[in-house]
Amino acid sequence: MNYTQTLEYLYSRLPMFHRIGSAAYKANLDNTWALMKHLNHPETKFKSIHVAGTNGKGSSSHMLASVLQEAGYKVGLYTSPHLKDFRERIKINGALIPEEYIVRFVEEHKTVFEKIEPSFFEWTVALAFNYFTDEKVDIAIIEVGLGGRLDSTNVILPEVSLITNIGWDHMNLLGDTLDKIAFEKAGIIKAGVPVIISEKQENISYVFSNKANETNASLFFADDYVTVTLKNRSNFIQKIDITSHQLNTELEIDLPGTYQLNNIKGVIKTILILQEKGWEIDLPAIKNGIRNVKKLTGLMGRWQVLGENPLIICDTGHNKEGILQVLENIKLTPYRQLHFVLGMVNDKDIGGVLNLLPKNAYYYFCKPNIPRGLESDELMKQAISIGLNGEDCKDVESAVKTAKSNASKDDLIFIGGSTFVVANAL
Image (cartoon, rainbow, N blue to C red; front, top):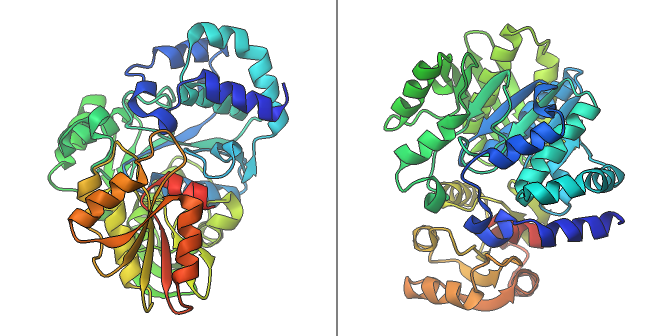
């Protein structure tokens, strides 16, 4: 098989969460452990940082990878889902995993994997860990796919764990209260491994405290250690002041979006703990890494500018907390009229998100090109029932095209509602 045939085989053969939803979710780590055993336990052969959370874990993972690259380390990065190319999920120092490696890996292990019957995500974790081991990375940043406790990535013993925040997402799998969701995310906390929480949410902080006490893990709420002050924003660069016991400096972040100010607290505290553990990360590496995240890691889809006159921006925020952050950024962006290309998947809190959206925008309803996508006419029906105004464009491509034809040069076109809408737009 060539690369295209290999991916087609995997997509058709393996249950894939982002396409079919909860049917692909495995509520245990049995398959992952079987894969690790077959591959001679690659999860034990590289150092790592484990990153979980509802929102911000992807941005935080990329920031950490960027800083460690600038510090001179060979850095693996595992994230999900991808936006344009499957290989975005697995990188070393910003370079995508080679197509040939994927083809060879599938050919070599296909027979055994078919007996284990892993999900697409379980298989991808095995591929990533094997690749990082073969390439002898110094450290790998491993982003949790869903939850934490039962996520396939949760077979590593990291240097440090980072949990960004807790919000309402995947309630059908993780629980119907923030306490239950926090419990699942806290499942990545391991014996003796320091854990940082980027945002201290008082009503659920006890969940992390209890788990840290139970596992004898040092717990750090980044809010208690790191203060971030925004100085200014210009050309989608944010200048901030960082104040902590060990680091006082000005940084520039090339990731726009107010939500990055929350993420950066956890990232900085994680870096400070790595320094205490002996990792050599100097101030220039921190500054250059944070200033050049997109360039060094290839991060896409976070308040990303796709065009000007009219200004076109996309963002992968897709749950209530993520959408609130998107709306905050829209408020900070000058425009005459807001055009909103909106699509969602059918297992999200549709009503909860729609009720947050501005009534004065014009909406272009679409269905992301995956089986889980909510039909555009159903999305429009729910939106119109609460006072939103717009038209049914069926698919993302048509929605973006129609928005462009309707927008004046001083308008703003925003594309989002789902990671997969952004993926289709890109």
